[in-house]
Image (cartoon, rainbow, N blue to C red; front, side, top):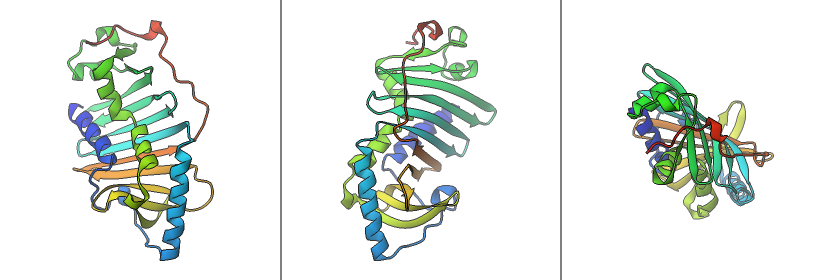
Amino acid sequence: MKKLTTFTIAAVTALSLSACSNSDSAVDAHVTSVDADAEAAAMDRFSTFKDDLKSIHSYHAQGTVKAEDGTQSTDFIFDRKADAFEGQASIESGSVDLSIELVRASSLLWIKGPKEYWESFGYDATPAIGKYVVFKAAQGDSIAKTYDYDRLVSTVETIGLDEVTVEGEVEQNDVEYMRYKLGEKKKSTSLDIPISGEIDSATLVSRAEGIDATVAINDFDADVDISAPNPSDVAQPQD
């Protein structure tokens, strides 16, 4: 699990405008080229989505990171105004199959995990069983960065239109999306947004060093209430 955790960090970095290569993985769905008129319309739609992001205060995000030795799946809700998120991460790697709960609020991070999760990092798991462990300062920031998809969303919000390329149409779950390359042509993340109708979802996809990563966001501006766990559910901080 240590190796998969390292891969997960690399994958999040990969999604942040890093390398993306070609293969037959689902990350690289078949792309159908579009003509100049459709490309111009697609750029207008991307610009609209980019501007809309500035007013989106919350969303639901589901991520998947696939590496050679395992898979990590995440399911979080984000409160952009409060710089907070909470949810679950599940890890499957060899004989390891476990889930952890995370809460990020007020610049602190809380994690609740099973015995094998804590022991994999060399911690004494006894005081943490059934409890959240709170991480402060740099240690919490380092762990939270692995799961903070909002920095990826913010990248879409701030990227210049001259850094965006319309790649073409893709189909996922019987829905047609336009795929965009963000950043340099050979060194970028892809973004898929619906071709027509309300833009109520988007997907970021990338691959780097044998890692496939996707982050799908939806449920924009749903009511969220993210707060610290009850003190009775929190163990002593890990140093």
